[in-house]
Length: 253
Ligand code: 13P
Image (cartoon, rainbow, N blue to C red):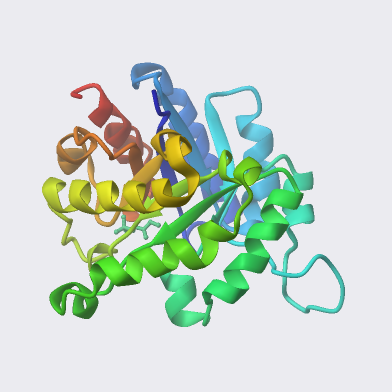
């Protein structure tokens, strides 16, 4: 059985005070939500310390949205994986399409970040996904395959066991255009097959999350698909009620 995960990527939203309130609201209402789901919140760096403190000993775990590719030193403005891990953070999102698009992240830079995350005993949530052009021109399979092969295939078997993948079609992020449950399943199955080519049976154990305009009213249908193990949620993770409502999508499965 694969773990079911609902992860919130807050992106560059909320002040630390608002973020702490948001996570408190999530915790307050979690009792009513499905307990078989692992909840993860990924606030901006500035809130990590406080959010870890508030969530300690609860069912909510904390992730960062990125980390530096270098270990330490003269890299103004960067935050290292060691710094993040030292706070008690468990996950790091890597390769989000916004990082690839706006900050020039490539497989080469992501390989270095992966190394940092594993060296500090955290778990990467590695994002893949195609643009609308790539989907419409039929290149989606090659694009996603390359994103997996160039980064995930560099991992050792031991590292591979601590990995979450998120499929986030770029055209569905923040647009309100959600992939259909069948489109998500088709790509998730393809990702799992690609992973199995290298990691064999272990691929069956890797959680693959769907991300892109997931809301409480469309989560259940997507999560019902065999290879969809949860969601990476942007906008809807900024409201405790919606975030937990998405987790309830698993009740219907
Ligand atoms: P939205 O849920 O706002 O579409 O964002 C998805 C996302 O990018 C999560 O990482």
